[in-house]
Figure (tube, rainbow, N blue to C red):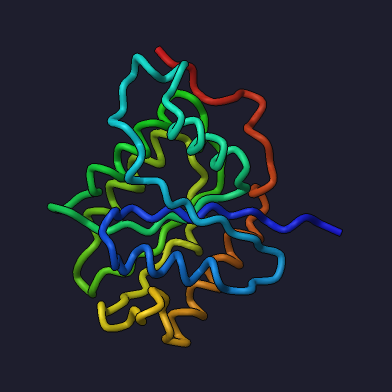
Length: 192
């Protein structure tokens, strides 16, 4: 019997009550056949990226790398700040540069911003993930606008259509043919 796809859910917001975090928290509660999820909740704990600490990183970075290594795929959900990614989320991605944490790993994102918003964050995320050598799973990269009022007191989304959309995303990521593949034989790009 095949093992469930392990998907790491990574919110790009540190704001309490974030619709991005609510979307991933909701995804974490869904029962999707063949998929298990882990919600990454330590974005706020990551220190500023320091290239001098890449080989001997601080404990929060070690924990991030372990979570990424344990995952078969990664799903991001991030807000857009000033037309791009929030600094704290970009910092998380910076900690993965040069060590292969995301190299060859299937990834996708859900954009929950209102219509007409979020494109800058999507473009930047696509560019950064490309530099990292991640495998972007296009059918799982979707827009599911979530109004602030759509987040319940429990911090979850109740809307059935949104929940179905999130389940579909998890299903696409879990079924991706490369999700269980190891890092390609060529390995991640070497650090300069």
